[in-house]
Length: 429
Image (cartoon, rainbow, N blue to C red; front, side, top):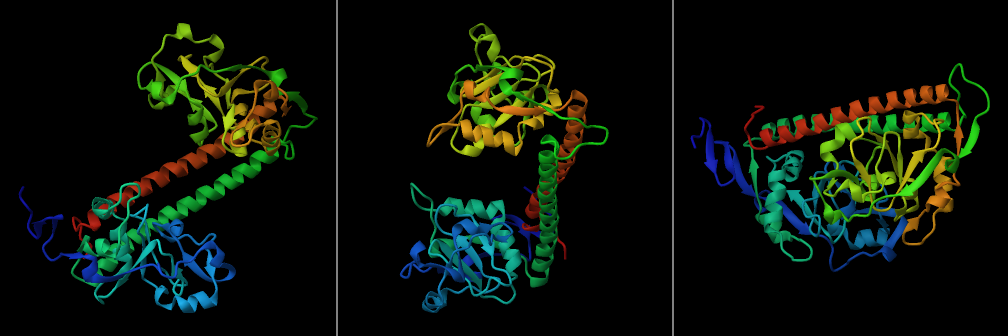
């Protein structure tokens, strides 16, 4: 393959002629966490020196939530393991490609025995650039390729020091690359924070509207309270294991997919190709296990209380065969008292969740029966008010979805930038 002018072919691929290939050990000192003075939960205190563990490593730095702390005496004893700004801490066991750059305010902290500390020893190197190199997919793969261990992957000081990385010739160019990627991170972080804010606003608005604590203009009067047994008929799903599912056959709703879904509805038409399939004759499936437009599907089992109220509303205007599966309870309307769009939201109130918790039984696995779901009560506004409430919440959902799409594009853009900038395919200087 012809290499364009100004570039050279290397074992690390095509890179600029003036870029070098160095091992981590050539550009930094690597130190293992304090094995001989290992710290345990009994050593932690409420007020002292924070200690970073594997769980606190993130792509954009150290997650500060719930950092354990050790006493001043332990800090003195482990003085040689204190971190400095621009150190990089690297996981050495398990999630071996996780690492984080130590920022201002984090220097003077300790790092656990499950981490390796990388400290630059060359003044012509930029720590933020190196951190981005460590987070590139190419570098992570090199780490995975040399890791040892059968049950749990691990690396050590010697292994990490031997891994190759590609370095621009000047600190100025390294800083320019790091600044461009940092700007991309800033955009991503701002979108993430905005999405969280919008979700909180929607959650608060939803709770008030669905409980009748906040009424929309033009609506008044007392809401009726109905039991779900008055509104729905309940039935079970068709049992099939995850192993029986493929991409051939009829759409199948596994209870695990309800638990994993961040949404409260499934649009069969738009999501058809992503829905698992079960290759079976519909003659074997009870009619009540086939999902129609507006049906609500609840899970009948969960490993935690929060999951006992998990559900999805079915959007299936084309009457595409859709089989409700294992550990599901299908709710089919008896009446027309609940607007279909309103159903996407009305089962998400604090009161409904509390009732699900009350009726759930079990220790390790919480379960709820069709009989008990029927006992749960729901305030029911008039249909026009339901429609108005659903329209407001739907608009808020659309706003959040648009931001999520923008966030996904920003993340893709950053990944593309990393592939181009960290290999020198695009030069900023």
